[in-house]
Amino acid sequence: MARGSMSSFLVERLVRWGRGERKGLFKMFSALVFALLFLVALPLAMWLVSAWADQRLGLLSWPSHPASLASGLLLAVLGLFLIGWSAWAQHKLGRGGPTPLAPTRRLVTSGPYGLCRNPMTLGELLYLTGLALLLRSPSFMLLTWAILLPAIVAYLRLVEEKELEARFGEAYLAYKRDVPFLLPRPRRSRRSGDEDGQSGKA
Image (cartoon, rainbow, N blue to C red; front, side):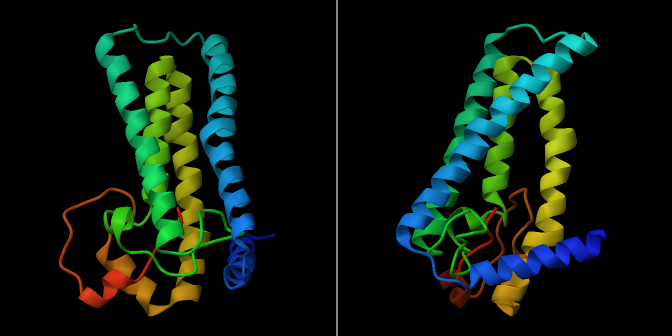
């Protein structure tokens, strides 16, 4: 299947799921699975692969230094906070969660989603970068920024943004024009009516 056809198929499926009703218990379960997948299973898999790669390629871990360890801990905690804040905003404001099976019912544009359109993705990258520093693993850092980041950005651009455009229309397009994709910047003034809306999922 061609890339365009695949992305169109995924968008269609996500739009259909997004318009369906979900029970509260299902939303909680899907959020828990999402957390275990991206906060536990993914880092564990990356650690196993990076440990093998560092040894196989003869990559030396950088020296253990208090500044490096403190930076890693700070980034990991900041990333977890941003992920948790984003999940709270999706649940409280968007009446949904981070998974495609139980997405937000409303477009969330306030809270962390007023800083950038994908604060949860930013939080995950900060979290993984912090782990890479704590583990002192060059391969873990490389996996995060050279492989995982491009894959996530491709999904967000080709699938998730199109799904949000299909579900929320002009409201999302206006939000997309006004708020940066991933890296926060000073906010421009927005119409007060936009503050009642809600957000992207990642």
